[in-house]
Length: 197
Image 1 (cartoon, one colour):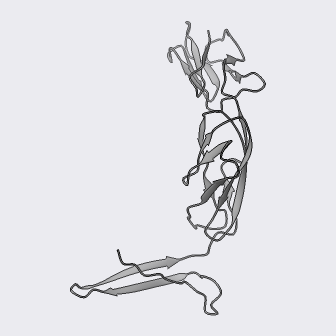
Image 2: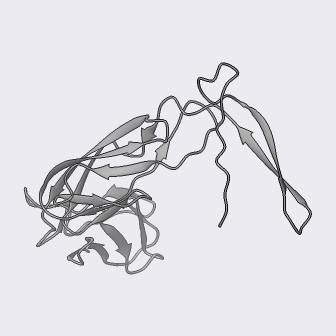
Image 3: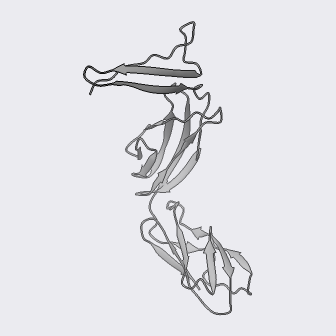
């Protein structure tokens, strides 16, 4: 349970700077251990996987933070400015609590930050697709988009085909494979479903 705090300073004592460091540890009854540390420049900016996001109540989404200022890897700290609207864990997992708006802020250890604006709507009570039935020729494609009422939403609607030999669906794009019939089912995050024949 013992530990040593290392202060990584530049020659003038202002801030950490790139380089290598080896720490030697001598135990009372054991051999000496060596630990090598590599110090690189801190991030000067970060970006989030989403700057704006709409979710339905009860829905989850995981943000990720990246830096374009080098190869530095870091763990961002995530904070919600209104946890009655949405909460966020320290690994960036957002949970929509109730309808409203709030902001998630991600910060680095050296106080560089980025924000994601959240719009939380009610979970869908019903769900539609942009088409109820559709006829395609072999190898033809079409887009099927989920449709919600004004105050409802689900970010993670999953679409699946009842027979991938007849037609496949990926990223809302339907592709006809062979002559026949099948059903495309759309499922919102709260289990509400609809179909397209």
